[in-house]
Image 1 (spheres, rainbow, N blue to C red):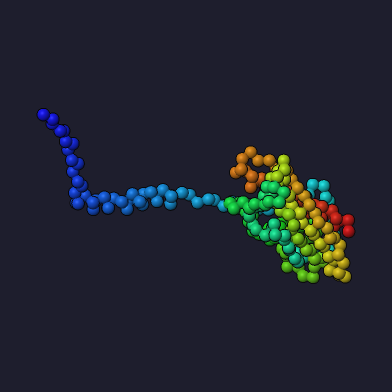
Image 2 (cartoon, rainbow, N blue to C red; image 1 turned 135 degrees about the horizontal axis):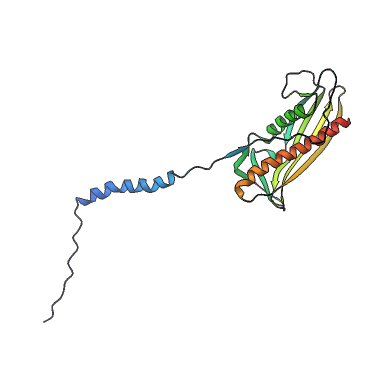
Length: 220
């Protein structure tokens, strides 16, 4: 005689159990999606442009009222339109750093820093951008053509190039029309340090340019 051993049948889930499962499901979904919602958003860092003073330039001294300079026009190339820091990664490729930026657009921060620098280190120079003097002696036009970090070479370079046109209002007579360029090497041990070092060295490059401009101004 052959005896067949039958497996006991699994009990079917009671219909009363389904509401409990349905009630738990939203909680499970919320828990899973909550993990994504708690992810911290990226921090955007802002850096100021602060050009240091000249090393070996004697301050311009004049008797009587100060020399007044009005910064009239500020232009930029397409490379310099964004407030985000820009890197050159190959000969023809530039990329923006979406998490690191200047405190304003390059045109504004460069003009503001140029005005501050000339008043701080130009001796008796006053600028119309920061003072209320009328009838300036000179008009200064700026055009920013390069303002980036070049990672395609070693060491990396902070590069700034700006055309400066100084016109004596009486006449008028163009006194200076020159494109100034400065670059500063910067090395970084980690990507987190790169934006800060680039901003610092762009500030140094601006200081170099303004020192050259002041030398030319003294010569005239």
